[in-house]
Image 1 (cartoon, one colour):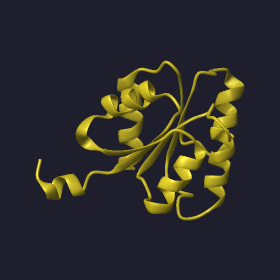
Image 2 (cartoon, rainbow, N blue to C red):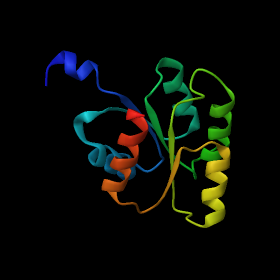
Image 3 (cartoon, rainbow, N blue to C red):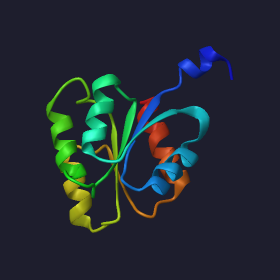
Image 4 (cartoon, one colour):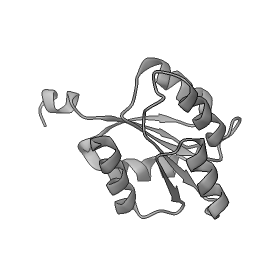
Length: 128
């Protein structure tokens, strides 16, 4: 891959406190994207102060502030208000899905998830 092609790859922020899940997301999405990682909301805020990703993959249960509270904050402020967010959660009850969508999620996936399904959702949201 040329440097020019690499420079054009969209950046995905993966915010999850579990390193294996961050690795799974990267493996599922492949080399079409660049990745930045955050273990918690503080780390994610730091990343967002330096870059605007094409998409965020966000866990609900994070140390400190919940992913849904963070998502609501993201949706209320520029410049990341319109960045698509895929919420992933071990809690798969319909109420959890509704809460994620009400907070501004573009999509919701329960853990464990099908990597191909995640890739399909991300591709659709990034290319939209």
